[in-house]
Image (tube, rainbow, N blue to C red; front, top):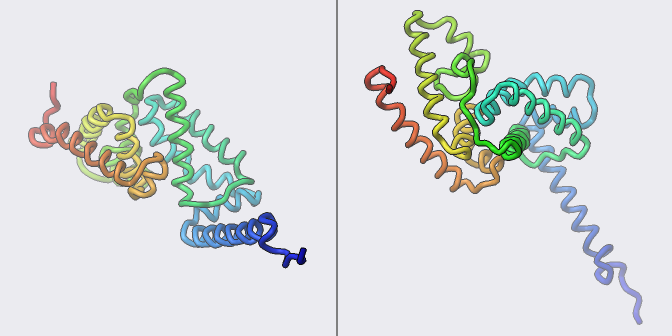
Length: 238
């Protein structure tokens, strides 16, 4: 039998290794591209490499944003805060295996959405209306907790009556949001609060982009129907 050339006969040597090296090269290229485009990917890679202070910066950057989304999904501030801590704990435990395949926020909110869904299923309940303070942290759009810049803008803007109207509008939007299905609510929060693209929302929710577009279209129709009477008359429905 003629001696082989060292390739082709053994798939572990002839095919597996080159293909494996190719996959590793492509993964390294993708990681470099994402690191260059997304500063939070770069930060998470520093967390992976145990750079001092990197994890603390990551927590500070995302803690309030996570709580702001989760409180709308689970309905209670205390539970949202606990889930946020659980998200960061999972991120830290998984840091050594982190290989960026998408924007960091997409990966993070995928973890958060899965935890929230499991949390609600475990308690055998659907999302409930958040308690007191929902409107106080709501941005002018009425969706999601305001970021610090929004808070400063509200504090400087308008008369007491205009600020009161904003609070009332936030309450109206909250009530309308609570009538959405869970998937519609997640899609709206990520689209309006986190400004995610259809593609990124689809990644978080494990849906197709077409499904996300359909969810958002139905949610917008519902919100428009609920908000138009108040916007026309300035009076809340009894």
